Image 1 (cartoon, rainbow, N blue to C red):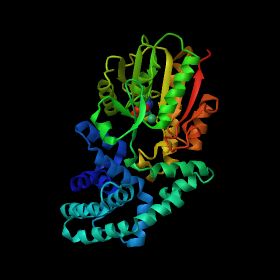
Image 2: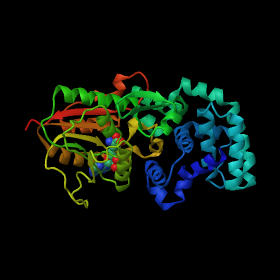
Image 3: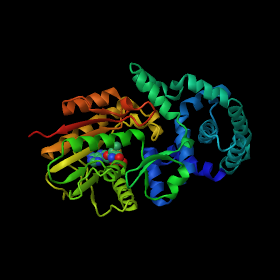
Image 4: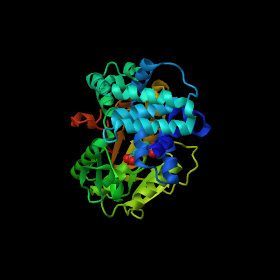
Length: 399
Ligand SMILES: C[S@@+](CC[C@H](N)C(=O)[O-])C[C@H]1O[C@@H](n2cnc3c(N)ncnc32)[C@H](O)[C@@H]1O
């Protein structure tokens, strides 16, 4: 556990701020770097995600405990990891976690900081049940003030987002296999079996909805495209569910080199590396360096747009700290450019599916405006259980 705590530290905000590269990249990107350079142990990933997910309650707890600024400032990262782990884990005994965190502190920051970490850990442990009860009664405590303000007119979005953040990683992992069977599995089973792909129930529902639509309204013969495909979860799902006709030429593109690599690795794990033609391609970016060897028209295109990520805060909890209004400006522009170009490449009678991991009303309205119709699908409308907040549209090219 001490090793995992030390391994998790560089992913936390104050450690990231010390590195020019890590401070400019998203958490997802730096986790990708690590996944590419070797196995990132699942336990480390959980520590990182839960530290970010419990950030707002951690700040309240720290203020109650002391509120003083720390020296070195990076010590706060360790306290944040410890708080998230203590609140979200039941299988590792709390006292063990605290003493391992003290040992990690000794190694990373020297003996002077150990007393403080021990005292904060013991206090958190003593108040864990009270904290969990408080969060159960008022889940919105998990959200930063700026987001509560932004969505103040949308209590259902606030409540679901907060509950999503507080979901326990120990509860198991939803995944599907190459045969299309979908089930919740133990994390260990998931890690041992290469041909399993983790997916959120909301995304699985989306794939089922696409399959229904395609069956009811088969696209004409021709090539298929997943335009924003990496790391490939939805693409593998389309294949596993048998949505793509066996004789259709299938293309998958993404604008980021590292992510295309990850997509290729995932396809290879699935045995589909020859079935799908992958390429680096930035849609809607006339200046991008790309060799467009893609077909001129597609019978089917899926544009799983890059977005604010407001529907997937549990997997990208670093987004909680961003300036949403500022981020939205560049995101909306990118979505507009991608959609314009992808839509142009859909063949007459072809199907365009557009999806968004976002529940932010500004973003959803923006895409609705561009497509000229309201969304046809929302995962949050379909399931009681908290899951990825996905919105999607289905447009047939009638030209
Ligand atoms: C929501 S994610 C896709 C997730 C993926 N469909 C899956 O299910 O695993 C959006 C993706 O769009 C990519 N992207 C961003 N700008 C793009 C562009 N201009 N053209 C193509 N892909 C882009 C990002 O790198 C990111 O991988």
